[in-house]
Length: 380
Image 1 (cartoon, rainbow, N blue to C red):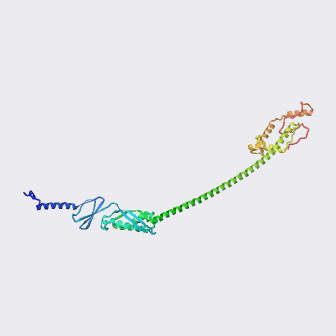
Image 2 (cartoon, rainbow, N blue to C red; image 1 turned 180 degrees about the vertical axis):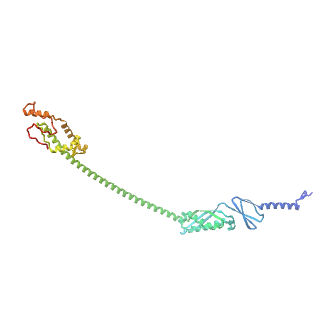
Image 3 (spheres, helix red, strand yellow; image 1 turned 135 degrees about the horizontal axis):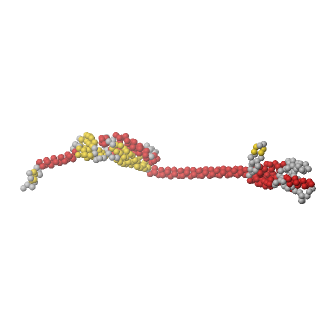
């Protein structure tokens, strides 16, 4: 019995071998015809080395065995730029590195125009970084990072557009000067800080001196104004004192005249005569102050004169209150004319009227005596 026998077909049968080969060919063919592209990729299809089209994401059928597909990532990609040594425009050696963010915009051009777009962009970025730093001074490379980034991006835009690549952003990560330059920069920074400190100190001293001078000036102005005000007040006080002394002297003189006149009236009232002679000064002052003392109005040519009230100080100086009391007492004394006539007739006839004959009242008004034999005199 033959162990290699498998029924009607044997392992070495040519028909079986052909069937297996055909099956394998079918599987391989199907495998070659099916191309799956991811959602973030694009595929460049070539047949017999000839570019045909871009394959969209999903399942794609391509010619088997003679086709090749090159995929391109359409997402933003990051490319590190290695550290580059450069010399600035002021001959200072520095080391700088950067990172570039790119994105494939046209997979066909990225496939046909450049061999390896990532390596190409990286090499172009290295040369551009050295060129940009070499065109700037050291201080600018350390402080103006934004300008360096923008210049590198602009330099990369034109060539990368031809490759179907867009440079989205460029970031210079670090710019490091050499050790000698670092030491010089530290000394410069220290000297600059010392200079600023000295300037600030000098400005502070100058400001302090100005403030002190301004304060002294204001103090002198205030003192001078105070002295001026004091002199003005002192002069005003002297002037007021002089006026008050003059007013007091005048009032005292008038008061003396009035007192003397009142004393004379008192003496006349005690005498037997009914005809009184009053001094002109007394009558004029009584007429002048009568309106204030009695409250009556004085008419001149038929025109009312307004009363002028004296203040308390003036009334006290000239003694108006005392005069008012005296005049009031005189006005309150009523004159009995008939009694005075009877008394005068009795004296003329030599009758005794019971002692010394005295006038019954003191008159403030002057009345002519029609029964008297003496000469009548008018008041002045």
